[in-house]
Amino acid sequence: MSIMNLVSPIANLLDKAIPDADLKRRISQDIANMAHKEAMAQIDVLKQDAKGNWFQSSWRPLIGWICGISLGVNYLVSPICHGFGITIPQADMSVMMPLLFGMLGIAGMRSYDKKQGTNTNN
Image 1 (cartoon, rainbow, N blue to C red):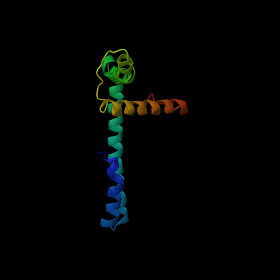
Image 2: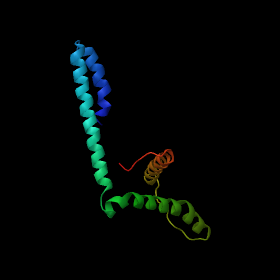
Image 3: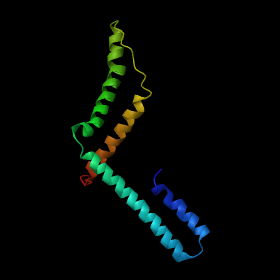
Image 4: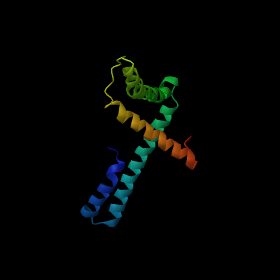
């Protein structure tokens, strides 16, 4: 859980616990500043991760290819081969499908960002 998720509930508690409006405002500002610093630190980590070497930056596409090939084998190759009397065991896709759908969702959001002209190079 991120500190960003805690800011609003803490602010609500401050309203109930601290009668002094100035003190309440200062504490709320301090909490918001901490949340902002944490968010900026996370962004810096993500930027450094994106600058990594080939292996670090290629694992996501590799997982995508593995998921796509597995999906193709399970739902295309195996049934077609079965029609010719060749049995290819099907993998349990209960783990692979959530991963694939999550990656497709991320790719969809990236496509949306590109269409909107969002600058994601920072």
